[in-house]
Length: 236
Image (cartoon, rainbow, N blue to C red):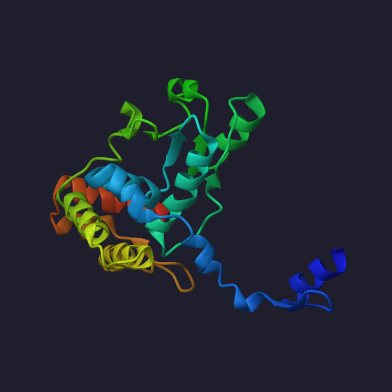
């Protein structure tokens, strides 16, 4: 078993007389990323899905509660698909207990999607920026996170696109993810137009004055600023 594992890890192939050959290239990791149903999430939360989209885009701390672990895990593993351009499932902590060791480890993460089956987690407002009661289909934003999560015209536009795409019966789950991703790329391209490179070899950073000169609605400007922080476009 160990020999086969090392062979796959180092060569991407494992050959066995009994079971034939295994080629890692035949198993696209993106198929695993699409295993969950984004359409089911949108069907459950409708326009409020844009809150989840915004929270994941801004790398906020998302806590999901449901008494059934299977529901928690299925839901949480699907959320990162809302920001397909990152393809980062390392933010997932699909089953967390309310004990000190696990919570301290969670607090070390700058942004995460964490699942709980203990209803008492709602009282731990120090843990989250967005609380999802999956059993009741409710999303709560605590006071300390409301400034960064302010919704405006842009969010309404994104929410409508998400819902319309998901409601199309001819669109498979993967196409809905693609539609959302295309909108995200449009937003990121717009954001990139307000960046500058101050020194050779450095990453582009946000020119806040250039952003302010566009006179976007306050909620849009606020979102783009916090998105620049999430995308590491702020000069520190």
